Image (cartoon, rainbow, N blue to C red):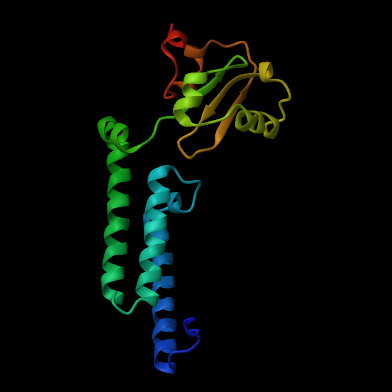
Length: 181
């Protein structure tokens, strides 16, 4: 027998959900303003997980009767504080940064695909070609490097007469040992 549609509870429940929605809306705006722009920028893995968790907690606090509004607000505030202090620690400590943040990874070098890096990061040659085309490059050999960034995007550095170790912007990129020399 099919379950009946749950289209309506009562006015009191609608008012409760509406009030909670407004409260969480204000809380999330305040959190974004306090924690900073990184909560709405292109996410790295860490930021993405925090934002998904905040959204889930807000939805739970708005809709679920067994999750009180104060419980959900407390959880959101703790996550926001953890993210704020973790990002502060990342700026101050390389050890914390290494623990928390992913490393950018070199995927191609002078037009050659680095298969081990591609396999490790699960990036296909087709995805690299898409990034090259987006950068206006039509031949693999016209790119010095393609880097998988910590937020999942790919950066394409066009062909230049520069050695890997002289490219300051690539100093934090994970690359094969044979390129280090």
